[in-house]
Image 1 (cartoon, rainbow, N blue to C red):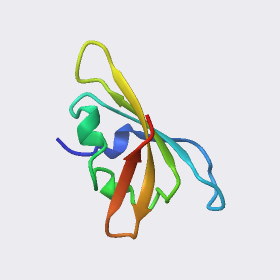
Image 2 (cartoon, rainbow, N blue to C red):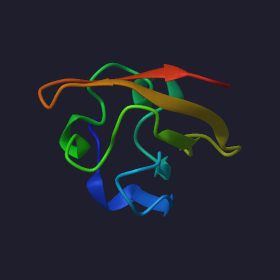
Image 3 (cartoon, one colour):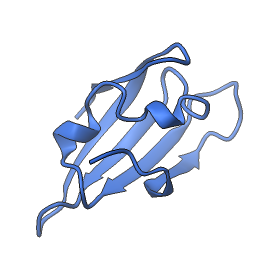
Length: 84
């Protein structure tokens, strides 16, 4: 599947001088898909390097959660790295 902008919420860090924290949940994509390069490409304008993303894979009966951070965003690509 693909990134769904409606499932992304900024939960803190509303200014450009600090990193933001985001929450994202998907009932279509598993955690590995959400952690793939350019999964969040449609959010390059909002997300910056150092932002963290709390991920919730809700494809199974028991959700699987993880935390990633934006490690590169040049406006054309956006990659994340896994924290947990």
